[in-house]
Image (cartoon, each protein chain N blue to C red):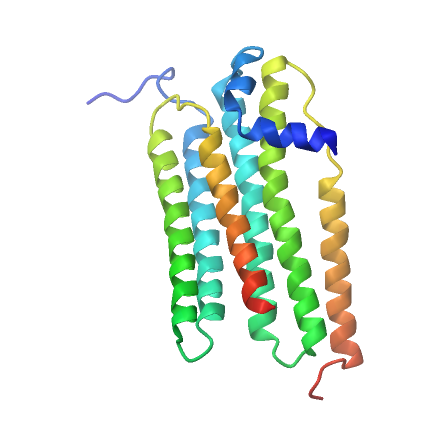
Length: 132
Length: 106
């Protein structure tokens, strides 16, 4: 938790990252930027999915629809916040010449998306919709 | 008019690829913003709904602004790194859309 607060403070203090180590090859920074953008797109897609579940599945029960939608939105927001965190950490590691940070987030996200997909299949197969 | 030498432009086209990544992300943001607008304007068009739609348009414009600035920076042969402010602004747009969605759906 303390680490996380430190990380958040680092987001808003780019100068502290810049003071460390030496500037990496600009191509590495650009690659890091593209990875960051790919995560942002993932986040936007999840948020869009949250809107879509709410809008285009009116036959689902209210609880299932809102639950599903909120889950997607929460994961989307987490994904966006994690994107900037990972970007800053990678930038710092590159400046210091360290290994890039490892992360469990991709595994957690894949499992989460898999679970939501299985839940959707169950909802459809079992006919847990308000209108048959 | 001479063709740029090998030193002038990266053979791996990294700035171009990064620029296209920004374009893709802008597209993703636009799609999400359209979905958000649809959700915001599902009722009779009351003032609250219009206000919500205006907020979404503002978020979308903010993202467009950030992306446009960065795309222009990336036109250089050796562009500077992504400013932390731009990264935070892009993330803030995604989070804002998510928070807006939670507010509307509940």
